[in-house]
Image 1: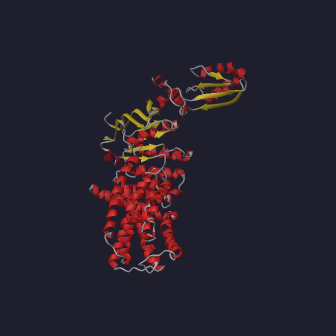
Image 2: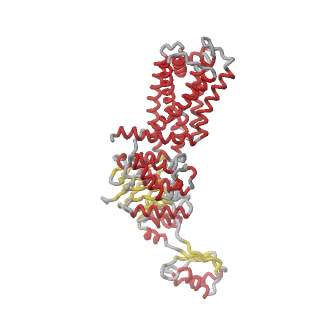
Image 3: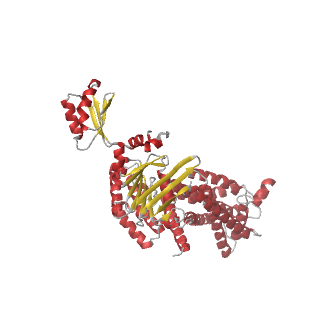
Length: 324
Length: 258
């Protein structure tokens, strides 16, 4: 892909005996969001650090905005913005001073750096806090300031390393909207996250990473259909009613519902009534419901489905098989 | 702009950032203002009566050059604290992802210390004059002495930068720095004449570069016999800067790529 804004081929990186990246291929066309999804320690941050020139790769190659991460590192840095999970803002500077400093270091010039800082503070609803030290900011405000710093020079490519980890739902939503607005304006984004819903909402394509390898790649809907989409979980009042419950709900799904220890689990297919229809059918069959809920697939589900092991557990040998 | 012009402006931006932070950390400025003043008062009034300094009418004239040199050498701890903090909190990552000069993070950091050292130095001179210190040399010598002290302080900013880059925390960097530098400053001609020490320590104290710098400052401030000390002190300072700047830059590249 010649016009990919972010491209990695066979990236490898080891720290001592730990193989953090074991040959990763990534590609994001200009103006798209690529989500890197994986648990802690999967290699997401290492990939970001290599693509932002903070870390040299052991092997493979990476190109960002057409520039090589090793040979053209200096020129590449003028094309990127980086916002990290640790919110790298200077706590002892004000919001305005933080942005102005970053603007100067992007070589925007004295006046443009000031003007751009004010503009970003306004856009990120930080104008009232502009002259307060960043250490007085809430977690959400710090993340917004960190993201604003990444945007100071209007870079064509943006790297966001777990931008919403630890944020409350409202701040999370605000940040998502900001990121979407940037992409609408033509920016390419590489986003790492531990949350499937975040990757789902924002990404054009998702690469699932585990133990330094891409174990699945595709559009969010493709990936979710592999995991199985939404599932209905019904806790029955009596174990004895398992067969009746299975009969009642079978028409709602292509797979036969499974039932164990009084808990019935089945995939929810769109267009067949969902939870309301299930309740109606169970009621008609006189099956008592202790609890009923729709479960959306979580990162753990993706992992169990794709790798056969839970996200935080060490790998087993089935990995290749599960991907194939 | 040329890359050199960028390196200069980037260094200035980083130095400005480090200076902006200082008044906002009261615990920090206490340690380079009130603490050295306290040391002067303790030495003058507690030890002053007991320490014999042949050739000096008053202990304070002997002491001030020595205690100022010690204060200048400790001024670099601001770099040690700041740099460890930046490394751990991800600020260094942000700097390294920017199209700025690679040298500016360390150069801007150590240059900011020159400003805080100037404040410490001015304060110490004022306090020294208040407790009876007298400049007995000419104004040119005094200005030369101030220049030498700031140069020597700058050299120790690089020593502390190197220490910070080799420590896992700012507390560790500070402890290590004090452990290395305290004995060096005391086993010198800063507080007592080396002749009063046991002979093995006396030879160490006379070879100690701190003694060279202290003796040079005495020559420039109170007209003590200088010998080659002034040029020796300049040479030591420049040499320390060259060695520790090179080591720090090397360690910086290594520390941040793991």
